[in-house]
Length: 208
Image 1 (tube, rainbow, N blue to C red):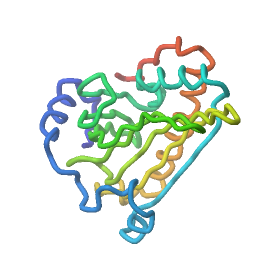
Image 2: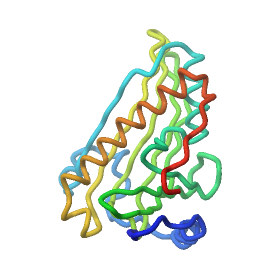
Image 3: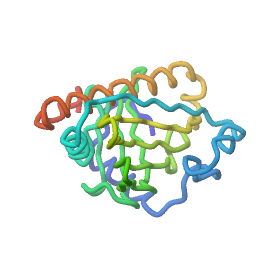
Image 4: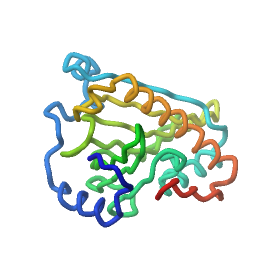
């Protein structure tokens, strides 16, 4: 959804409630839990970045706390409005952003929560998928990993996406640039949260 002015939280909440029970806006769901060829053959772009954010179990636990506070969404770029506070399957998450002189707000539904451990690894994260009126279509996963052998803590973002709104299609290079910038700032946001012990609050979005 695009508009010239910053959308009110009431407007965004109305969208979330309207699409809470709606089908996803694409037929290929799920993509992240199937062979990558399914999404690629359907015309989706696949991106996967993974970076180290620290080491040790305490760092992993701090990163998990930052996830639960939704700090993977960089406040310098987007404003997050979850329908409910918890990371849970079925919860609706809306993102407000500004780019190209326009404000946009879009909703996704969490369809997967990862919270498990083995002898060698501990993981935490979630995946969500786009709902009607979203400018794109596809899925995104945010995942933390703690390697018990190396004590390395990594943060990864994996996404299958296609532009859906005509403005996103016409400005495809800019659309991809925004996606890359989001991933870079999201990595920085989790690093900052880890380094501060998750004590730095999100900053307000300019114009919000």
